[in-house]
Image (cartoon, rainbow, N blue to C red; front, side, top):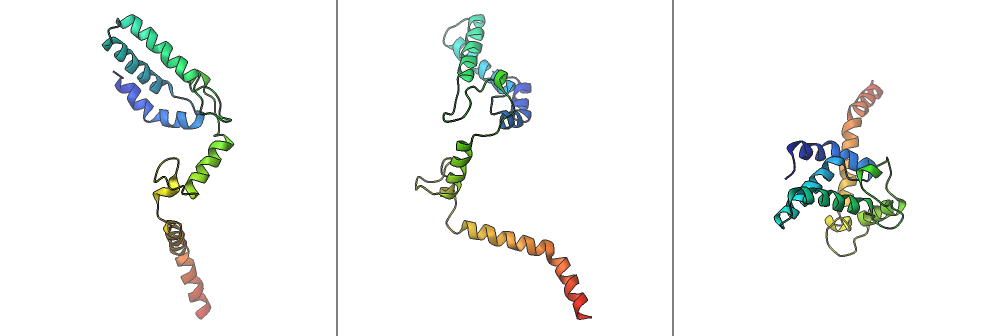
Length: 147
């Protein structure tokens, strides 16, 4: 069972931590260890052995984790450093945003999430916002040229 502190930190500061480093934040890791410990205890293990086994299992999994390609290996908080997504990850994201492969809406096929007219609607909305922002200046300029 995870603590309230770990839950709050994982869902606030931890989000920024994960985005900036590409690694699991310490609070989420604590939650994972606690969940694994509870699972091991339910399976019949004693608390001390379960806690150390859970810590080792989670650490081993996180330190050897990789997305593949040119992404770094390891997502343990001890391996965290400020990083940017790989070129392949950015390329895949951009491709999924603009190329509907017919597999429906999903994280790997963002273009399937909106209809074909959506880019034009977004562009039109952008033009309307621009006209709204520039409207007072256009009105003043038109009034000044009439005098």
